[in-house]
Image 1: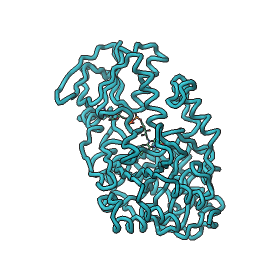
Image 2: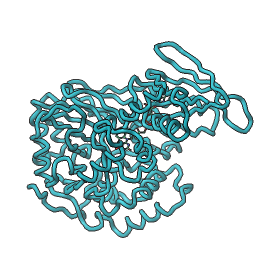
Image 3: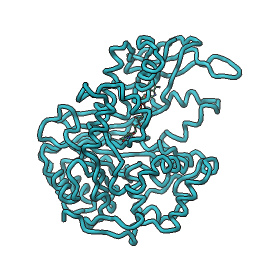
Image 4: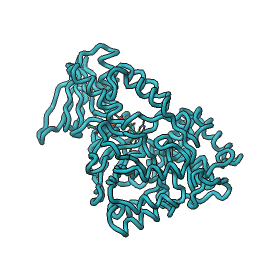
Length: 472
Ligand SMILES: Cc1cc2nc3c(=O)[nH]c(=O)nc-3n(C[C@H](O)[C@H](O)[C@H](O)COP(=O)(O)OP(=O)(O)OC[C@H]3O[C@@H](n4cnc5c(N)ncnc54)[C@H](O)[C@@H]3O)c2cc1C
């Protein structure tokens, strides 16, 4: 039996490792086809200390059971004498999140009140969504079930910044996330129970998996785009009989036997993501390659679902995510954030500036975030929940004065956060656009032809109580 795995992200790599470990398939009989030149998909690591790193943030919890069961068998990259799972839990036990200031208002005050600012009516609406059968939520958006006020509560800021939910996302996905993470509910504001990788996800998960798979003979075909999957005519089942792919500018086809396995990643949250630099804007890429295979498979048939719900130019306003990674040669900024929030540097979780233009969240990682990160550098990460796509081309220009003013406005002119935008001497920032990144929110409603959500600043919650930052 041969196994053909389309997609070299965590899913594809994990599938290969499970086939070897649990099903005793020989590595030499497994081929991974990855369109990108690099493996890792959404768990990417780009750039360098000199040019500025580019990486995603990291949110996990102890209930990623299949992941941690698999990673028990994989030696950690930073300490091969223990497994990735042991390294992950030892780190999170030793350095747990202790977020003392998750949401700040424009005056630098912590937004935190009883019941996360939820009213009885909000609580009933939440209960209704959680108890409603999924069939009744199909194709509907979160915003259809709550008042406008709900989206300005402390609860919504906490939830949406940790889980990446937006009002226009699918109510089904929201319900699943709520049920999955309900046990964290009591500690959303200090992020107790939320975990992160000890270093960036690429080096924490992807590199160790690849290092385990390679000596076992797995064939990695990077730069290989699977264009089509041939299906044998059969009345009651779907049977693959060939794969067609493009590599080095040439087309190739491989026969798939009846006893072979084909496992396919359809699409990617990081599809078409584009990275900028200190001087260049990330330019939109619209290849749609990560979705093309699914689109091809779904052509003229319903049993492969409806990819149009997730991708394409029409979906971008609902699914766009903008993140940025800052590589700092000093600790001035991270020290200021620690003083502002009262959280020890690297243990503060997320800091959301709720009155900022894009509703920015920042996360100062526990250092070093990258193996071999030069001593003295600090890497931190941020994202805008409500980015303005029209402002992205100017947002890249980190080094000129109008751009700095614009970032200050975006940061809501929030006290010492502004110093971040003032001092750029030794800082390398990298902005990345992920046009389909929040599609995990399953934009079901969009498929039904409803007009796209009108993005706007969330209204301010005057009822949410505030307290002074401990550091101020
Ligand atoms: C900025 C950001 C932050 C994130 N943070 C977290 C987090 O903290 N915690 C978390 O659990 N998740 C997070 N995610 C989501 C995470 O990326 C996904 O959970 C994870 O990457 C899913 O792995 P996957 O293998 O299923 O898909 P992907 O990682 O997307 O990999 C799919 C791969 O398949 C390839 N591919 C697709 N089609 C083809 C084809 N036709 N031919 C060949 N190759 C193809 C793609 O190029 C891609 O490399 C984040 C995502 C982003 C973008």
